[in-house]
Length: 69
Image (cartoon, rainbow, N blue to C red; front, side, top):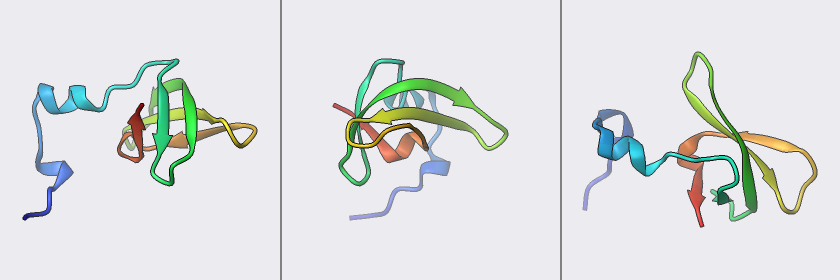
């Protein structure tokens, strides 16, 4: 078994795996359920804004911290 380095993986098929759209249902890295409300980019890279089912407000996540359900 080996560790995967995300930065070394390039290619369009890899990028497609982590594409999110507004309305997608997601689970966070700590198993909270929510809905994507915005996909945006800043100087660091892409981030996903999600509204969680259990907490009021919106939270920004790295795409690698979310999974589509």
